[in-house]
Image 1 (tube, rainbow, N blue to C red):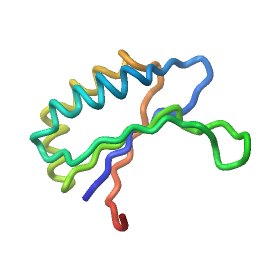
Image 2 (image 1 turned 90 degrees about the vertical axis):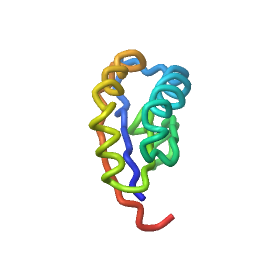
Image 3 (image 1 turned 120 degrees about the vertical axis):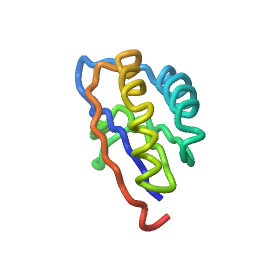
Length: 106
């Protein structure tokens, strides 16, 4: 299984609408477009702190999508990736960072 993590670094003066991101983008648009294309599950994290006591979270939010295979994700991304990334300005002014990971232990 693979996990695609879309990370939004904490940045002073940037906005992030958690309600829109969780309900409309991830639970709505992402599930609607990719639900029949191998999407296994979706998760959303809100950053609450860093590793040291009192340290700020390095990421305002992180979204995770899980697929059975890299090929499934690539097909889904090719079909709807542009549309999903076009929705980003509706919930944040932060430029996302993306990482694709193979899950080796769960």
